[in-house]
Length: 538
Image (cartoon, rainbow, N blue to C red; front, top):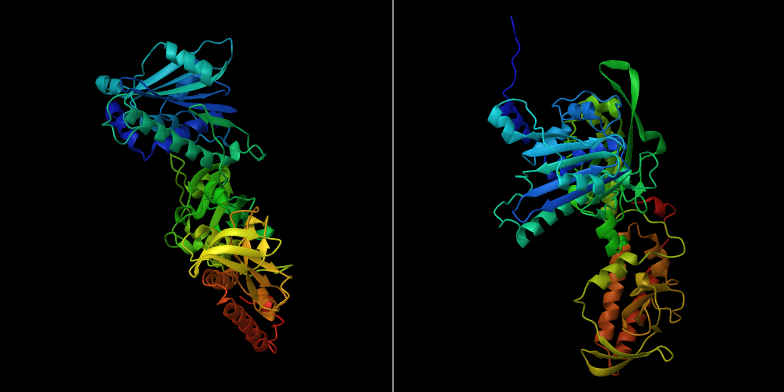
């Protein structure tokens, strides 16, 4: 008896459009095939015709395919690749990824410069009309030949998406209009950003663990984005714990290896704006696991149900997990290579391993991490807060004389008020407004100053006396950067208030207040002893 039960071609080929791809994950699946073909250059181009018809071309300079290989590549459930490390895994990616975006897609390739270009095409509407697994036998168009030459070169493979009915969420634009062009440009930009993350280990020329590639989207080269920002982040797991042995249930005698690193990023206040926006990109959604198969990112963000949804206090930790094809079954990778499933034993292990690093990230986020004081304290966070706060009540400086240490200001007491205070030129912008010094001879804890990065555009600052007992016994023993910033901002606010409310009549009163406060603090701290283990306290 014949038990063959063939699937309905029309129903199945359309049903496979809805396997969960989006534009970014579909495009990344095409890039996977190019990397598997040993391509070093991959070029993506989006095209909008005046009629509103949209095309996406993916060209690579990989080893290319002969006609038999081309036919196999276009078969749903293609033969398993001999190289098990290949980023292509199920023999479905090219087809399901392409059809998730478009109704018609072609594969054009040749494996030698002297060879003939060959083409295979699936058209879902044609399959529906004949209700057979029948591809189209189409000639290569002049546009396709030109695209191959420009995007591939002599040898390689070109993927062509057309009838792109799902490339834009809103298809109500006037065909070929400026609005439709802008919408397609946004799609291309998001795709480029996705590639920069997903393939960053391949795009980084300094990463020698994986073949280096170059990717362009509409002529723009993709610059990789490493989510761990290793130049400034701290990898907090001990060396002995960053390789995890894993045995699979079906082969308990064989041990495979998984790599893991826990990266804790700097606090926002310890980075400038470029670092925040270009390198760290800290937000809730980016905390959690970044899981790589053969160097290709397949999952990013979130905690795999080990912990609750993303919380702000853990936004500084990102966990890098690397495994190779031998652990595919352990992670149950889906067809899109954009989702993994961890078994319960692995979840339990990771929960215990990462509890400490998560708490470390929490401490840094809350500015409660321990600090080592060597030759002074960092006031970078305080200066950053002051520079970004525009609404502080402070005087307006109209003139400053560094030789006489005299400044003319407009403040709450009137215009043209002259104030005697240190005038400091060419100051480091990272320590502009709050600065510690050994040069305060009055014995006071602090004094107002007027500061500038050059010798103009002066603003109010505060100098803190490093010889005062409050500095040596309290400041330098503070258990967290947050505590230091709190004291910095208090003294800065007092200095700003003094400069904003001083004149010839009141200047002596302000000086008396500083002297009396500083003296009282010195007397109060005279018998205060610094605990021997203070640097070990939270």
